[in-house]
Length: 266
Ligand SMILES: C[S@@+](CC[C@H](N)C(=O)[O-])C[C@H]1O[C@@H](n2cnc3c(N)ncnc32)[C@H](O)[C@@H]1O
Image 1: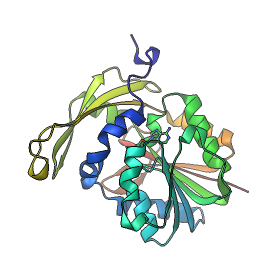
Image 2: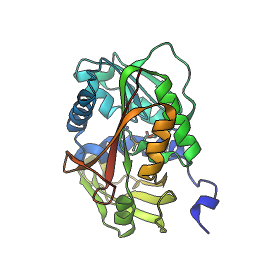
Image 3: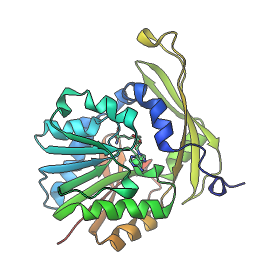
């Protein structure tokens, strides 16, 4: 039976409650400093030099930390308290506004922003196009004229690589392997994988190994573009990301992730 016909087996909230204590070890191979640089370059291409940033689905706040280091005023939210607990302990985020919210139902707040980010395929955890649309509309409503939205999404290549058993991250806390749980790979459909910490070393020796289930939806370039334009965004751009650099992307075929940007005017 196609996974789309089943109720989601795990929500991202439950997945990340479990994952939170070791998330930063898993991500220790990621370069968030470089990600922030790329995002700020993209914003600058649209004439945006952000001061107030909203980092949606911030997780443990790794990207938000980079913006704080750039001297920006940072608001950051996630709907997983365990992830936010890790973010709140980070000294560089001591002045940031960190709160629990679901990006599908953002609360009304007085603040508006000139940069909104949603990084590391967080939007793939929105399992319906309706949820995706709600999130995009919510971001738009909280942006000033001239503000830029930047987010990334997994391509089908990512799911294919997982299905082939090829995605392994070697970190100081052992290796993390992404394995397919549901194998049919189709554009615009759900994909499920398990993320397992294969073995522990050092401080992790003897700990129970981690294993979480991740359910994501693939979004077609055409769907994303349509939702952004319907919400009112202009200058919708897509770029492929590879080896810490951005490339022109006509489609998603050559990349594992596509970075989207969109401008709010007026
Ligand atoms: C892969 S992590 C990325 C975290 C962070 N952006 C980063 O770059 O490290 C995905 C995050 O999305 C959050 N998330 C998923 N769906 C969400 C939703 N509807 N509202 C808020 N957060 C959500 C999860 O709780 C998790 O922290």
